[in-house]
Every structure is written in C-alpha cells, then in structure tokens.
Length: 273
Ligand code: FE2
Image (tube, rainbow, N blue to C red):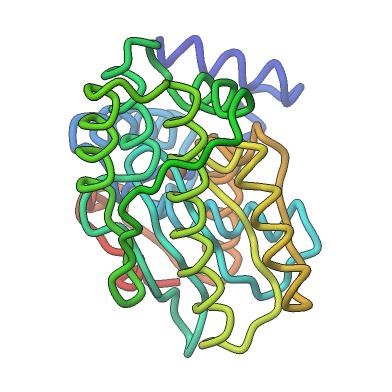
C-alpha cells in the first residue's frame, strides 16, 4: 500500500525516486500506529537514498501550506477536521493555540450524528446536503467556554431531538448553524486578540460550503481577509508535510534518523520551528 502511494506521488510529480533531496514525515500529533508506519517507511526511503529526514507537525503543516497557496502572510488558522478542532496562530516566535475543542473534533461529532440517523459515513457531505433542504432552526446548546468549544453535549441533544421525531433536515441545518457559529466566534475573538486581519481555513470540515460562507461573512464584517485553500489541500495531504519539512530544513533544523521518533501527543504550542 505505502509503496503504491509513493509510486503514484512520484508519477504525479513527474520525478524519479533518486531526485528526492529530503524526506519529510508527519510525526505529530496523531494515532501512534499510523505515525509509526509512516515514520518507519520514511526512514527506509531516507536511508536508501542517503538523504536527510525531518519530522514535521501535522497541525502546523495545515497552516504553512495555506500560506503557500494563498496570499495569507500572518493568519489565524481555523483548523477543523475529524479529530482536530483548533484555532492556531504564530505569535511571539512560536505557534500558539488560542482555542480548541474540549472533547471531540468537529468532524467526528458530525460523523457520529450522521451514523446515529443512519445516513452513513463520512457524514459531513450528507449532513451538508440535508441541511440545504431546511431553513427551520431548532434551538440547540451553544457551547463556547472561554476560547474553547465542546461538542459532546450538542451531540447528545441532537440525538434526543431525533428520537423525539425532529426531522433530519431540520437537525442537520441547525447542527451546521450552531456548530459553525461556535467555531467562528472563537476564531473571531482570536483575530481580535492577536490584532490580525487574515483568517485561513484548514482541515476537511472546511470543505463545507456553509462554513466557508459563514467564515467569509464574518471576515467581511470585520474587514478581515478570508483565505480558503482548495479542498484537496484543506483535507490531510502529503504536500503540506513535504512543504513544512522543506521550510524547517531551510531554517537549519536537522533531525537524526536514529533518534527521530513519533510524538503522538505533541501540542501545537510545543512545536519547535
Ligand atoms: Fe489534519
């Protein structure tokens, strides 16, 4: 499988394996077995080619690829994926986390509700489609605590309302309006706190058209530029890891192939870059 992915990537990039000058691999954060498989394969290629290897942080990679592919220079990143929901920005010489989910990632929350109402996996695009069929807002818990958000109570409440007979379309519409408003409230406050005027979206949930629209509207109202990379870069991708690795290498950061290890629980504000 991993050999096939590498082969396909080389084909798409129109290069030979021998032309690779640096191997960059995602080492944090994430599920340990997945990170281990990637690191093992990356080490194998780096030693085979006798080129340097560098371990990159997944969350920071979302921010840096967004800067590369848009005109964003110093943005606040709203990173919303299955497992992660974070508001990140570079401030005081490091990446800092200004807000995050206190329980599950927004994407996992949406998928969990989609499974509950039997519309299958992945739930995001299906919930988005159902939401278009309603304009009937059903009041739901709006959970913003300081700069953080929480989805577990919202999920329980949605399930209860579905059991009581509320329509899937109304609940999907209300879920999006509530959850996305929570995310944008926190992102807006991070923009104000950091006195920045660029919002960047990242993560698979940001493929959602309603979230994009709400982000653009919030930005327009506060004279902030909203940058949205293409969907194939919003979702997890290898290009962002390669790009961050090359930036780190240019900056002089070096990792030893023998000691480089995964950091499954590394937090964004612990990343050295
Ligand atoms: Fe991600």
